[in-house]
Length: 220
Ligand SMILES: Nc1nc2c(ncn2[C@@H]2O[C@H](COP(=O)(O)OP(=O)(O)OP(=O)(O)O)[C@@H](O)[C@H]2O)c(=O)[nH]1
Ligand SMILES: [Mg+2]
Image (tube, rainbow, N blue to C red):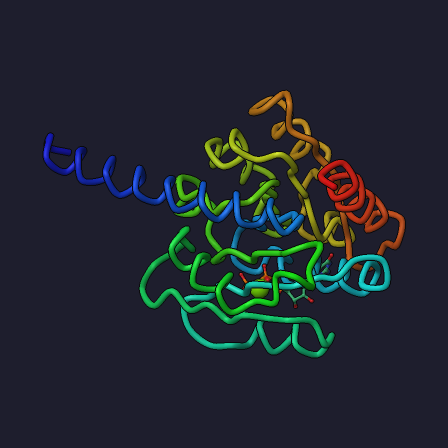
């Protein structure tokens, strides 16, 4: 990459960071904790947010920003739970950015929220550098992507607070070692928390719910 290109990328990320900081302050003023949910395409981002809404909507007031390249499919899934939802299409971009979140925050009833889930575009690379103003960064991979997926994408694991290895109910069928994926994540980032989940194993979802509750209660 030539010097000018490096500078442009640097400026874009710096401008993004300033807006992210503004978003973070605004969310903080309203006492809202935002989770940036990142992960591979089809790894289970929407499913795990849906399960969190099902389990937690009596305790917390929840809103969602559903990021997708095009279409409102995930946003429509969330709307079934009668929570405030903003569908945020990125067009050609493979990640959300702080400016898109700023626009979404303008449209959300911030006075009426405790938790904001931001489902990022399915991708393990692009979202890594773009802070959104979140308080917790979560990366979801599933066993069906192969058990080398974590070591192939170290950067996102280095920057996240929680790693979720999902779909462990089909580990055997796809020949993946979910424990190896967890230990790879911990090796990439010794301070990350790593859990295994399956939408079909209730106790595994308990760990995800406990993480959200602990993070939210500490934030309040
Ligand atoms: N077997 C199994 N399937 C799962 C699990 N979690 C999600 N799925 C399925 O995986 C598919 C993709 O799940 P989504 O939640 O839509 O994944 P996503 O990450 O939101 O997908 P994109 O937004 O398209 O990137 C769906 O058919 C889910 O039912 C799981 O724990 N086990
Ligand atoms: Mg989704």
